[in-house]
Image 1 (tube, protein in one colour):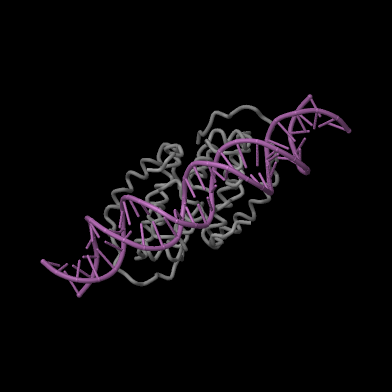
Image 2 (image 1 turned 30 degrees about the horizontal axis):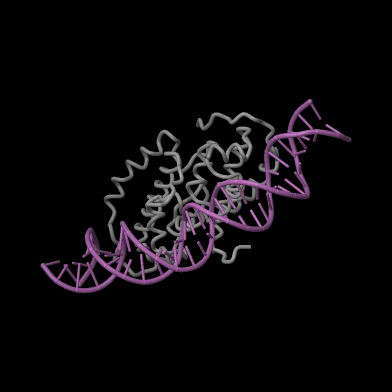
Length: 111
Length: 111
DNA sequence: AATTAACGATCCATAAATAGATCATTTCAA
DNA sequence: TTGAAATGATCTATTTATGGATCGTTAATT
């Protein structure tokens, strides 16, 4: 058990678990062992185990790397279109205000 | 510059940047400052900045937490359905083989 | 145009993640 | 059923991320 526990909301925690499920599913579908995936991702075997378990402390780069290798599609963009997606979105980002002049803490997430 | 650089594929790196864009977009749409988002997420202001920049070293729990607060939908499941999604998927996961008996490194990701 | 809050970057100390090894157990295949 | 490989767990050393503070700059309001 870690010394201190970083609090995470149920939604974020479940999302991490869900992604872990998708990765494990993809790995098994491709007949890859945990060790093989670890090697291809350039990380340790233990880290892949934590990623598949939905550990919220894992670096997002390692998680996305594992996802990419086993073919998990992220944010509705495949390997060929992700970079294009990012690029075209830079323009719309540029139109947004650079600073927010507001003091309301903004209630929250309704979607 | 960090002592060692963790290598990440373009797809994984772009996915992190894309998520950062979505979070920044959501934050600005809700008129929240970086500091306000940081406080609500229980992290530092600097971490929110790195998250929005697409830093691959950020913990996935912190990133998903920020995403949840500003209303970014993860893996086609909203707050009300994410946990249900995870739960119902445990069954299908249980049907998958527990160990992979194969030596092929499996080329990779085509989708 | 002036004011001032928000932003982005950097530095340091500390907390935490990761690698790597080991061991027991499970589970697939012969 | 048996044997070997894969998995899951745990431990320690080391690398790395994070918090918190600070500073110059940018950009919203008035």
